[in-house]
Amino acid sequence: MLLEDTPIAAVRPGHYIGERRCGYCHRSSGSCVFGFTSVSMTVDLYQRLMDRGFRRSGTFLYKPDLLNSCCPQYTIRLKASDFRPSKEHRQAINRFNRFIVGAQYEEALRRYNSSSHSASSVGKHNPEFDLISTIHRAEYDHLPQELAHVPTAHKFVVRMVPPDCTEEKFALYRHYQKTCHHEPDSKITKHGFRQFLCGRPFEFERDYDPYVMENVVSADGSQPARKRLGLWHQMYYLDNQLIAMAVLDILPDTISGVYFMCREEYSKYSLGKLSACREIALSLEEQRTYYHIGLYIYSCQKMKYKASFGPSELLDPELYRYFSFDKFAAEFKKSEYVSFAQNHRGRDSAKYLRIASDTLNSSRNNEERYEDDDEDDHMQVIQTVFDTDMPGVAGQEEIESSIDMSKVRLIMQKYVFTAENLSNMHPTVFAKLLEPILQMAAVMGLDLLYDVFLYFQ
Image (cartoon, rainbow, N blue to C red; front, side, top):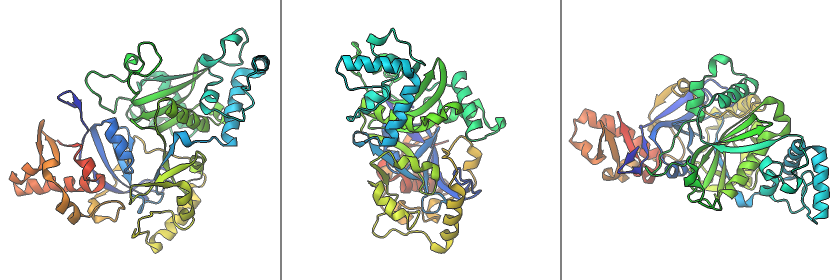
């Protein structure tokens, strides 16, 4: 949505949604979130929302209630320039590279490197391990021209493409959902795939299309003319077959991993870990400071790998500041809900002792599930956020006393006006509109609220 050629963020007022099915431990009513739907969204605003604990699933943006959910979900990120691949990461990258090029090419490359006094190799990592060069080393477009006459075992190509819904992508998605998540065919639809992982969720200036490469690369191809932005699909082709795809939100100062899928027969090559290394390398190449690894749940065994991409940090749900993972990890041994606020409320021990025990047992072997496209599962119990003790949310009286209604912009029946004009409406209508405005202010914070348009149908 554009106003005078300027992209804006417009969202429908949201709700607190409690007792929804948990996609991680599969409890029928263990997950609580505050969520709303975007009519239009900018990359700048979404990045700021992420730093307030929000994630998106298509156009649905949700902020988990970490205090009252069975599986508290913490925003986790990594400063890309600080990443040092572990021995496990290096071995995974080198093992995959050797699989791609094969023994004949590897031996030819060894002789070539020896004759040219180079220390690099496909199969044996350099003590001075360079992530970017190593992650690309076996890609067809990066093989040295001097060895073009030597065949490789496989042809591996990686492409960044616009987030269109194609039959090729949907076939991979269907395969992954069936083999990895054991979903029945009836639940795997092209409509759901398109809503969840495709489309154009972000708005840009009228004269800028991020998917037209002339806007991304300068005339001589040496430097980006403008930063690559928006939702992108990173495609992995092996011998011309699509074997994996990463779905990425590329934002002004971070790259956020949305989803990753791959063919089951290649999972033995640790493609999930490889994709995270590749996305960190992409963050460096695209000159982004951070890489967001999604959400982290302490009790979910399959999320443990995220902590290996260090030094990572987690977002405090009350202070909205990032602290080192190690600092959080020490506290997670005492409680699954952690905040470093001086007077944070903490969980009611009687209520959550049983939930924590059940969650640890049921989620140890569960794989991470992103909040996906099943809208019905979002809408179980709806109540006002002021009736909850959701952390990091201002109270109603505090919001009422501090909000500046002249800065709250509304869209209603195609008209744009500020909320201070609501006082002229009938008291019943005024009360009906005021409550969702106050809830959005409490959860988003006033600074973010003032930068969006609230869209009332």
